[in-house]
Image 1 (spheres, one colour):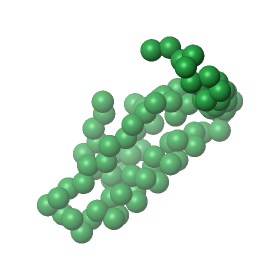
Image 2 (cartoon, helix red, strand yellow; image 1 turned 180 degrees about the vertical axis):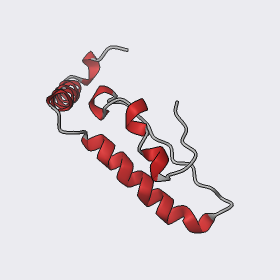
Image 3 (cartoon, one colour; image 1 turned 30 degrees about the vertical axis):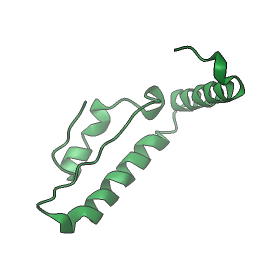
Image 4 (spheres, helix red, strand yellow; image 1 turned 90 degrees about the vertical axis):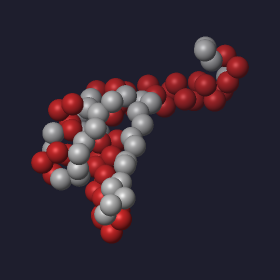
Amino acid sequence: MYTVPSSDPSYTALLPHFIPAAGSLPHTCFVVVLDWTRPWTFVDELETWLKWIETWAKGDGSREAQIAKEESRERRKSLEANPAGGSL
């Protein structure tokens, strides 16, 4: 689990060094915690984090990321075609 104290660019610029590419983490969850002592910043903070997550999820366009996306898509199709055949 990683925590980041703010959406300041000095922090978000470091995240790619600690969080692997999106394709290598197919079941990743992000939780954005907002500072309730400053509710007027909610919209800006959410916008900043959602843009960052979207950019991260799209990946860098590398061949490795494309392969991981294709494998994930194939796995999902396989599970949809045979839902009872999945392992626990």
